[in-house]
Amino acid sequence: MTMTQNLPTLSPGARVAVIGAGPAGLMAAEVLAQHGAAVDVYDAMPSAGRKFLLAGRGGMNITHSEPQPDFLPRYGERREQLAPFIRRFDSDRLRAWIHELGIETFVGSSGRVFPREMKAAPLLRAWLHRLRDTGVRFHTRHRWLGWNESGALCLQTPDGEIAVQADAVVLALGGASWPRLGSDGAWAPLLQDKQVGVAPLQPSNCGFELAWSEHFRERFAGEPVKPVVASVTLPNGDMANRRGEFIVTAEGIEGSLVYALSAGLRDAIAADGQARLYLDLLPDWTLEKVHAELAHPRGARSMSSHLQSRLHLKGVKAGLLREIVSKDDFADATKLARAIKALPLTLLRTRPIAEAISTDGGVSFEALDDALMLRALPGVFCAGEMLDWEAPTGGYLLTACFATGRAAGAGVLHWLSAEKRPQEEPSK
Image (cartoon, one colour):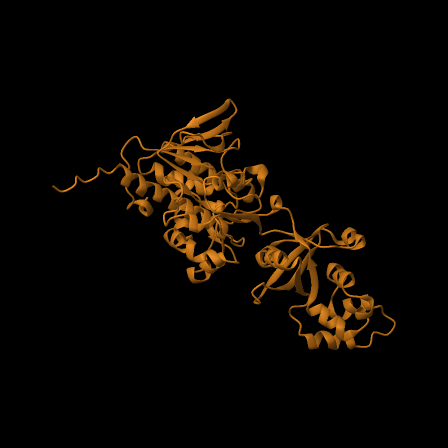
């Protein structure tokens, strides 16, 4: 492929182990196999790409079409560290790579990029077929346990524990969300024991818990709330806000709007013990207009009927007002208008990390060199979600996994070619 033509080709015999058969691991394996490495991919699950497949069931959002000046800031505090990798394998190159697999893509109205069939399975099948054709060997139900005393990789298999020697290793083990699909974070203490810096894994793109009343929970759990504008004050004092929709759950709230603000909400809870999320229930109305409609004489009508008639507020939005606003404030047009435009929800905690779409934390970039090799473990490279970064949904997560997997594979090639190069004789 033209995107890897400038990489060194290894001499026969170089063996690389890739631990993890998600997008990052598979991309590293592809780069390596195309440049002469004998590649073995190991994964604890019964088949490759389990989380990738499940993520694609609702419509595989592979990347985003927005230009890089808008794209890169989606990675927040780690955009500078990820930028070199994403620039080398950006959304355009990713789409071209998918097209080479025979999978068409299209750009949705939101700018998100999808495979034409909206599914991950055809893409994964074509990819695995190409990988096997290039000589990549897959070993499923092989769980990595660390290293033995001689430095060999230890793997638990259905037939017992084995030791594997490799010239280089790519770790692409994911974060700690969806552990039933293989990303359980069990690798973190194994690396910490080797003096590798690992930031604590925590939920990202996650839901939050609130103390709903039993009445509200029974009446509205499962209901979508739309459209609204949600706002949160970040720990640094900045205000983040986003328009969209979310879903009321029995435990609290979740959905795309909540996920988009989850990092700030999670950090606010860590700092203060709870977070305040403010909802504008009528984002297309001014406060003055809302107040004027509420102040309109309602005669014998109830306030609920008045809200529905004058403001078209009903269902779950009206239920949220009843749940949050005190009885006295509900009867005060001025205070009720303010609540409609900035309804405060008190978030108590994140939902468990196993339910999160992705995770924050992982291998610190300070523990890695520019080629994603661990400084403490020469010849061991890391890629994908196990690195310490986070991003919103919308194609950004997968893009960074593909890009860092490709970078780790390239890093292995450069490292092995340098390692195998004959040393110059000292001048006499």
